[in-house]
Amino acid sequence: MSAKAEATKPGHGERPILATTGYEGASLERFIATLRAAGITLVLDVRELPWSRRREFTKNRLNEALAGARIGYMHRKSLGTPKAGRDAAKAGDRATFQTILASQLDSAEGRAALAEAAALAQEGGLCLLCYERDPRQCHRSDVALRLAALTPLEIRDLDSAAGPDHRS
Image 1 (cartoon, rainbow, N blue to C red):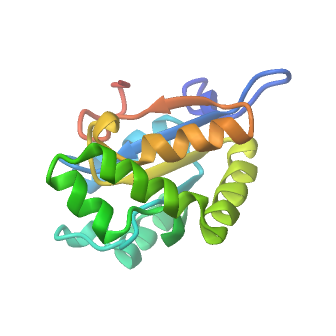
Image 2 (image 1 turned 180 degrees about the vertical axis):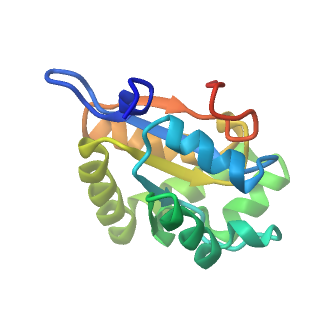
């Protein structure tokens, strides 16, 4: 494995890297190449509904494509934004969006999924997946910050649309 691919694996005394990415604007091939170059071994899909107009990014097809690249896939609905939160985000109501997302992540299911994800992140090679290319416009950044509050992590945003040689 290259030094670049080892980047997400924690060394002795180092914080593991938690990657995040969105597939907006990315081809499936570029998306997978970006994950492989970053040493990702498991994608955690944090969309409430793992559906996409782009069929290759729907849950089952994405799982198959990632398996072909020897990358695992998990979906956790409880880490996704409920419809009311997505509607608030589309309307530009960030405060309502944040309130709804916080309520979701603070639910019993949300807390359990965060604890599971934190344990997985400690192993290294984990990448949170959602749609938006810009992590500042996506709830996956909120999920990543929650995970970093549970366990020491370095958060790294991958730009799957730009490809494997670009990191934001």
